[in-house]
Image (tube, rainbow, N blue to C red; front, side, top):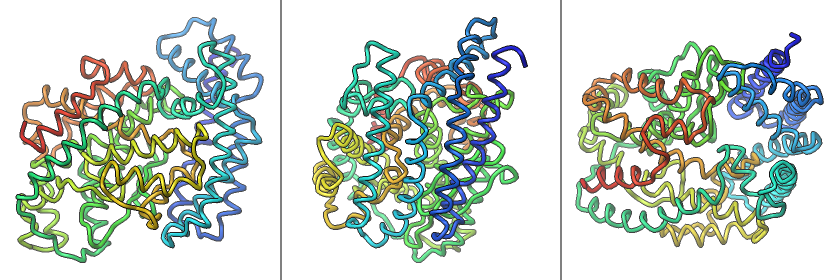
Length: 505
């Protein structure tokens, strides 16, 4: 173990093992942990975060990184060294004291969110969220200061805060990259939403029978997830307040939630999280335990979940595959006819809840959050301003009022309680990547629809493995998208997909 690169591999493998248990603790917190255990769990998680931070930012890590850069390394090893350096730089920028404080605050805030959101209790939640926003601003300032010392093109100050937070989830991305994309969507989607809504108003839609037993919904969703390829010998599915996918490739945890009055809410959430899980399980086995073996970016991760949830699961062929399973779980009913299920699954309707939104209105939910996050980091607004601003933007973008209904407004997501500012833009970037990847996938597979109708997703997963999953973090997201589709991110693919699906253009 005298070579610097070998030393680093051992250190990062150790960090990976600790991260595994961190994932499990987060899963347990969301699914099994009694509310009274939140304080003790917060202490334990804070300690684990601090241990990982100390192992990653130790002086010898910097020394070994510097020496390893002079070694003769393979292309994969060089990519791994770059990923190691990135993880070190991101970690050393933030003092351990702040890492511990933010971890404890996130545990407490998430637990409070679970109790206060159903009660629509913004009054008690606001100071808890304010504490988290203050910590995130402090973290962002530390990251800006560190980055500006390494790169003369980065200037210190509040204006640079949000870019540093985005970079945590989407390496190298910035608000300068996102802004024109979101501006185009803001300009294009409202008219498209109106056009589609007017068209669908004349299309018959038979209401689905309710209530639909949550346990049967769970079994339906579990069966679909398994058919898509989720390996229940290396993962499990549970219930949580907010659907998520966590764990590591050989120990994956997905969760969902089910509404007895909505067949597709929990089902689509499960398909979404299954897409995440398939990406994780498909990462290169030979590189596990190393940074280069991890997913390249959150946006790319979201592209995989949205490719399954939005691109595949909302096709007539998928509904044809799904329909017999619906009847098997809930019995025969005229409303379960394939054409009626398809109209339900592709219905465009502005609503309060992001995770239940259709693919046309969903980006507007993200743009709203992006703009509020950015304003918070610039200190143009404070936490107390969020409910009114949320209502204003929801009415402006989607014609939906939320004032006084905070549980379905600004309290609906767990991300801010967890301190995950800068995460939301990756959802829409992921939707754009998914549309572009699917366009290329379709070109190579003439029987794309027929295979889906038969419940055969093998060729689709093989294509994704070859073009996305097998790369891990070896290449940038832009490089992966370009290699897979022939060009970097192009929003035209997303807009054209919507016009083709909803307007037959």
